[in-house]
Length: 133
Ligand code: TYD
Image 1 (cartoon, rainbow, N blue to C red):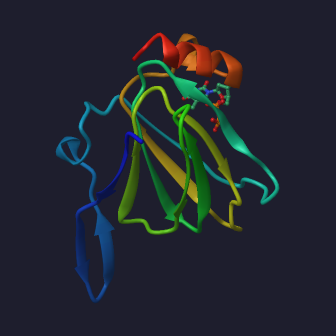
Image 2 (cartoon, rainbow, N blue to C red):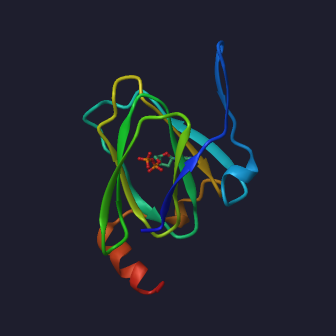
């Protein structure tokens, strides 16, 4: 599956850590940053794919699971470290669940928000990716 775990550079000393994400950390130009917080533990986020958008997800605090599907395989990745980013390319279905209390999911994105880039129906996603290979 076309996903990758990226090490986020950190500056570490006795007074704590700084994680730094500059443009060379991700394989796209950063156009948007947003974050999910105060997510109830029973909530599921995501439930869509993107035609063009690439994203890197980082658990800035707490933990959550990312369920990924590419039409052939399913993979679940738990994010719980602020120095690890999960890179998700386009045409991957994702669902985010099992948010711990206080979890913050930061998303670094390659594009500005564009609803026409979303596929929000799983059947349509399966049909769409057939046309892409
Ligand atoms: P959505 O991306 O579906 O959230 P999630 O994948 O986390 O469940 O977005 C939820 C709503 O917020 C939807 O109406 C679109 C809106 N939204 C914006 O307006 N701008 C943004 O940058 C994002 C991420 C969402």
